[in-house]
Image (tube, rainbow, N blue to C red; front, side, top):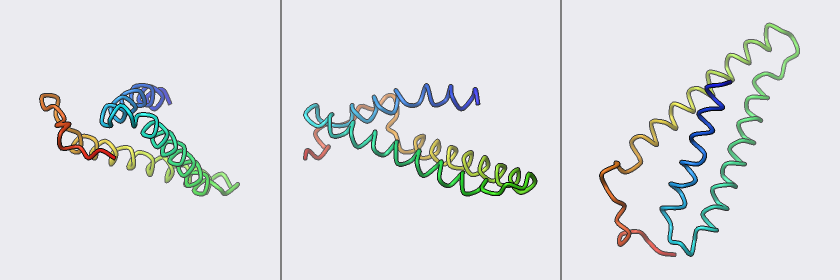
Length: 103
């Protein structure tokens, strides 16, 4: 739990900063709203799926579901890490603001 909470504590401000810096200043309110809505929906779906996996009251089946839920969470976190690692521009490259579409 300590690793998860420290990872979330360092990821959320970075993700918010990255998201809001990628849009025009006039659209930061919209971007913030979309980011927060996506975060809430992702959390809701995560709780629903993990709750579905651990739904049985029998201890052996409950623990099996708990193992599946943790394995699924780790796999999704690793997939998110890979997507972020290869999808974000490098440190040395600046985002070309002329090529960004303005809505």
